[in-house]
Image 1 (spheres, rainbow, N blue to C red):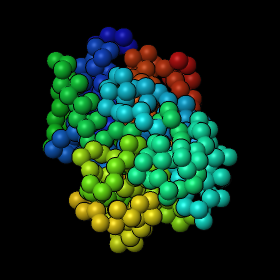
Image 2: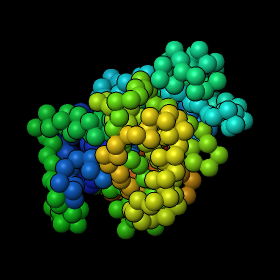
Image 3: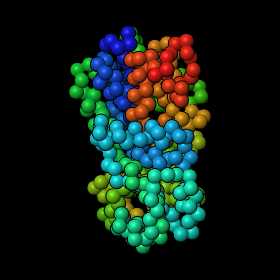
Image 4: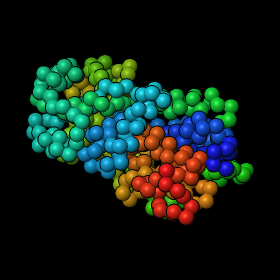
Length: 340
């Protein structure tokens, strides 16, 4: 049925599920989105940082993250215009200057700034850092606004329907394809999927303004601060190898201490929200598309949900529509798939 109209059920209305559904809807398919929560983007996507920073992530990630991440920036600035391309500023306290040098050696796409360059881009950080790296091509978005925009685009299609407050197993009607994008909840199907806890907080203050995400390098607890507008800042995020969703005092202390080190004004900020959830990850921390018959698992985006979801969604749609095969994220099965 490739190329003709099919009935496709997408499980999960996080950023991955929404992006997959959008690719299929734009291709003329009939899409049903099943979500156990009361609305779109209320799971792991809700607590994301929203940094579209493929060059920074290249510090320790596989080349795929940089390659697909550039696709992600294009998607979130043009296809679903939720992002601002203001770059990323990477700084370190003077005592941690070796960390900044190391970061510069393992990344690309930046210019080095002196104190005047830091002050020019972020006046409220003037005099606080004597060096920085500026990644001009990177972007950021508000994840909650982005998933709302994507859901709104989907609602424009008469061939798309949402079923909220509905467990995946409760839907038994036949479908031509089932695409499982439930994140960590899909571990009932994916034995090698693990959850990596990320904790975040949102601070509110009018004492400081930032135009872009700022990463503070620190040997014990590096942190990023992402402006969300209206005097609010997302501070995150921990990367903890356990599978509980509790926000710990230790993590909050580390995040707050790092934010204070970036600028003392954060010491007087109001804590308006804290949160934690589990990032779905495979052993190599790279995403996967797994196919068994007409069931497709699209999962494992780890720390790169918003960054990689568009590229992964395009490839998942190609599997459904053209029987495509992508060796970088799919297990080899040449008897069933042809190379795209």
